[in-house]
Length: 353
Image (cartoon, rainbow, N blue to C red):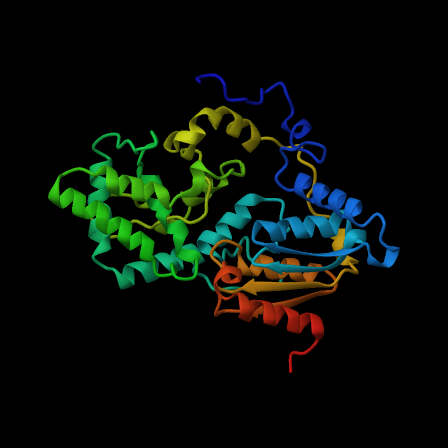
């Protein structure tokens, strides 16, 4: 029903809703809940058996580092896969590294990495493998720009939403854009045969984008601000021979116009995006004296969690052992589970030889 979506008002500080005592917090509440559950489950255990082991993948790893910062006394050991958070205050730094990876003014202070960002790198790989898609993508953009393309859900197919197919590039089995090429072929075939996109193709397009079903995280619209400063990502013209680059796992303000389930949340998203008084998630002083064993998998080829920034974090956490690899992607825990877990257990058991 119109007007029924709950929202914050500008007179209300979002941090009073999204803090450690509120169910709305993405980081604070899950960790606080886990600690409460641990205490409840182990209240009758002897003191030496009340700690537990936790594991986090991606965002779950961010939560683990928050757990280490706030409640280390509850942890026996921590396993993190593709989820060491960047310990930086400026979100633009994170996006800049994901897009362009090395910037002389914003370089990783501990580790220097290659000048091509992973998002740009995956685009170059994609178009090298499917050069005909340079023209196909431009043809789709030309059609989209003629008028509003409404999706079956009620959302809209915009140029940026089309480019968000690049979010798939960073996964095992999708690093060369299998689903993306499939979508581009379907949409191109529709235009060739019918002159418009069929419902079947638009439904398939929607099904590979999770944002109608998953929560978003506000970032002062950093992705928009940074993207227009990266030359490779500025071009969206349907003319010329330069490819239009896909984006990655970035959150853009226009998504609240493009995704049907997000439209009513646009005002709330703006308030959250520009809120300043959030509590600190990570305690670097505590992490520097951490006594809990931590075993982390860090992926050089990670398109979502920047390798250099993740390594910096690992070096700031005392008692953190790292498995660093360039033969696994961000979701290796799902696709190469046995090999990955064996490596982490080897770190724990000191059996590398």
